[in-house]
Image (cartoon, rainbow, N blue to C red; front, side):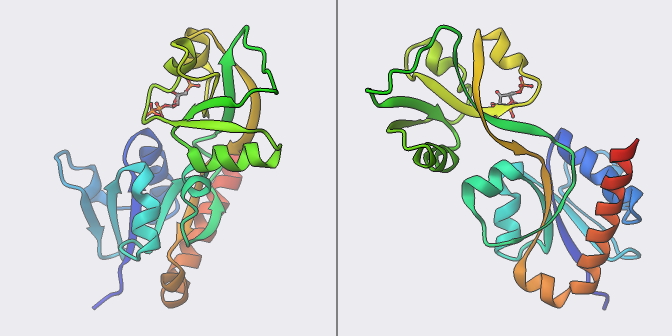
Length: 214
Ligand code: PRP
């Protein structure tokens, strides 16, 4: 029996781009293009099995070995610090993690700063690095509303085009870190399926580099 490479793809717009990268790199899977609600697809000829998972869950599948490799945003890797190898920066899904606030907000450094975010780990690490006292307010979405309603002074969130901030009268105050999609691998898979994983990693990094030059 052939050894298959199990690949966790992030469901959604980024996932479609990622799948196209895999397919153009020689790891196509015709079955995945059939419409329906199926989540697992394989192409035994190419020894690949793809499955769609929630983007923030990719690193869980990979860390626990249910997937050998996967594509995760750097935001998720920094937030959850999964025990995986980060192999390639795919140079897609680019955005940044930033602090944003109301246009007229002035930081009073004598007071604890109230920060609303989904990314509590990234936020704590960032403010600890600059020695600023904060009160974290963990939210699950629509973070931009928090400073408008006075729930927080600022937010830490992903900014891509900046449209969401603009439409809610918020400004970026500081950029914490640039974000992009990364190819990650399970540590033991990397040992035992090394040849296959290296082949994928090489093909994807060559593909990402050639796209960059276009
Ligand atoms: C993210 C983020 C912002 C928005 C930024 O939300 O939380 O709300 O994208 O993008 P922009 O700068 O292009 O406007 P996402 O759509 O990923 O969903 P979420 O609300 O679940 O975080």
